[in-house]
Length: 427
Image (cartoon, rainbow, N blue to C red):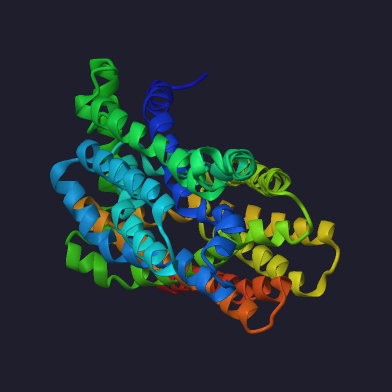
């Protein structure tokens, strides 16, 4: 029978997660829908593989530059106002992408889009640490991050259909309609966020007094439990060796995530498929990934283990990426890409439980933002690396296999933290 705390946390999840998941769904859709737009846009704007990798990735340069400042501002003005501002701004800029005329204007808008979206993901992670005890956090974060595969499960078929069915409507190309139509959810959700998001548990009138008090008591006890290992200042957070290792490891995993995410539609389209069929097929690996991500996050919570729940899928994803260089069968290639996708995505819900066990308060916000900022710079290097390799003669399979190096490196860094922790234990 569920405890009172579990019932309260269930209420919290039902109240907060739908809006946050929908927001992240829209964020991820708007950052990667350029991968589907490319099926038409690259020919219209004369964009080659290396240039496409660059304009895909420049989003993350803007994102990284404004990540930490954005999250620090959020701790001062509150999540409700700041998350709403982020969503509305990125929605408007995503719609503006429909009116670019060349690779330079596209790169400019993509950079501004990244700057506008900066702070949303780490802001939500920090926001959730104020609502959910650490022992339950991987499960909640996995539900939130399920928006990544779901955005592709739903967005890929929709994007393919828009490209085919809306091409030429009112004189606009299909890729222009894609940017305009898929920007609308972000703007709408930003307005909803401002009027409906509850700032903190003490403000939750939809919880009873006893539920609020019990939840707050557990959150205080949870923070006190970790006080000895926390850094309390923003400066400490930004120079903490553990935070830096986590940032570099997450960078490696992000190389795999974004390299695959931005190039998979073109890899699938090269199998002589229509845009619509490409959308449906791309959705399949992400549907499987969504299910595995939920399973893996819950498994980590039940076992209480984090490090190996990050290292194992990193190693498996690295192997799957590496094997892509040696296959010619489309079915086998898609199978390997599905394994790589599922393992890569399953890492993040577990990974994002770690920073909050090391840091607290504004330091946690800054530390999470720093990790996410460094990690998201992989969104530039991953797509660009594949585009560069393709531009210089590599096949799609060989280019995607390069992701294996970074996945293996991420696993090694995470395991080094485990070894270091064991060395500090008294003998």
